[in-house]
Length: 184
Image 1 (cartoon, rainbow, N blue to C red):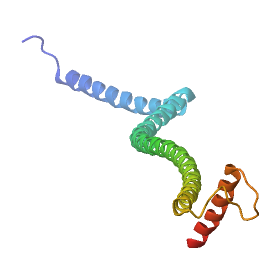
Image 2: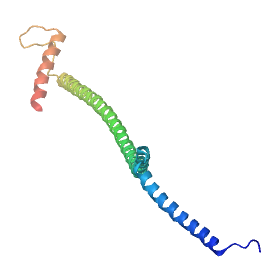
Image 3: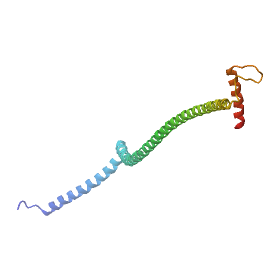
Image 4: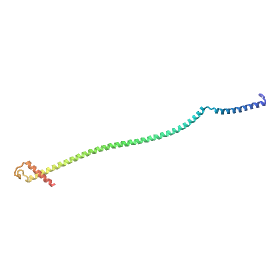
């Protein structure tokens, strides 16, 4: 066949490979332990920073969710505050309108009171004038009645003196006024 090699040689070659493999495995294990002891401190720092980064990212996600929740609550609070502000401004407008209406009503009431007092004064003045006119009318009526009955004669006076017609009328009017005042 190819070559006839002695069997011993094949066994020795196989044994040499096996021993080489075992030695390389042992040396690699010893080398790994030795390399692990001589590990670069920067690698440890990188690993710890990566772990801290993962923790910080998890915390950031939690805080982000909490922040979103708080923003939603803030929006709800802002809406309720805005509604309250609208209600307050509406009530304040009503209050201002009512105050203005009240001021107008007070002014109108004062004007009406003033007008009423003026009318009452005019009414009293009219009543006084009416009484004066009634008195004068009664005096004139009494004078007319006296003249008609002939009791009042200006030509004759009780003292024998003649009085003027005006004076006699005035005396008669005052007497008739007194008489009319007694009749009431």
